[in-house]
Length: 396
Image 1: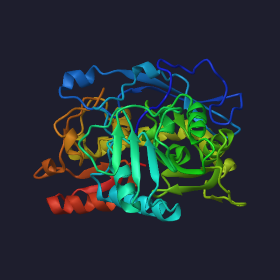
Image 2 (image 1 turned 120 degrees about the vertical axis):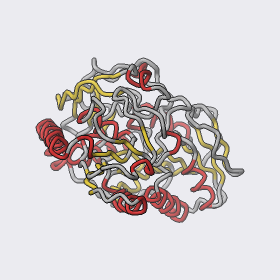
Image 3 (image 1 turned 180 degrees about the vertical axis):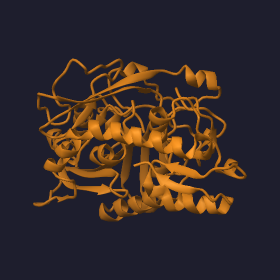
């Protein structure tokens, strides 16, 4: 997804104020050292990939709402052009999730005949799915939109949406955008202004940071300056002037799905399935030690199996995070991904070459490592079809 309406070159290391709830007294969480900056970009040449920039991850957290951000973030290092690609729609598992979500939003918010805007629409897959399902029209905004996915009911703009000059809309979508923004509060204030006095509802989706910090530390990557807990996301939405309609954990607990409204009735009791502030604090305060233990355990495990007998399935952000921590020298036998745009290209900083799954055929691969357990059944089925008898193990 895409960064919207923020000032370039921002560093927030000089502030101790929480960007989510506005509280002060941010506390140190962990220094994860240098990580690849361009985690959504691949390269045609390995040497170019090896020379791509790395940036520091110096995490602070807010004890009031358990929001986490990278205080060393430098936005001038980020480039969200058309080469940026975090598309997940090549996976049947993710397609099913997106289809179910589009159907639910279309039904519950009666979107037929209405107009939807998506801020950070990526390559456009979800907005087209939503508009086809609902029988509505849409406008997608994203400088990284490539133009190869189109639909007559949807207009795509390779730009950020202006808060003052925009198509009128009844519903907004912003999926996996807020975590990229140095100032997510300013973004939501702008969006609230764009809603005006009309009744508008919307859907916001971000990774659940507490899930990641507890189970999947590989999702701490540079383009994500913010890491939201359920508490911090809810407080941010209310602080920006939105009414909360629902906040639930989705995609097997990995995402937070926040539904908001302005100039509409809000429920007396909001459906909320977060972990709770006490549990969020507990996870964060033990993260540093847990992270070091997980990294060391995986180094030992792969040493025991043998790097030349292990492959990683998934060359997205989590996969790159795993490789940067566990295999920075590129010793794994293979890194594979379903996205054909990535095949034959190289990952930033680590320089791993990305292969199609069919390249695992005939190789002595004993273990296939995955960084997202939601895809286990799909990957196991694909390996069976390929005739690869490797064990699938989840690095979370």
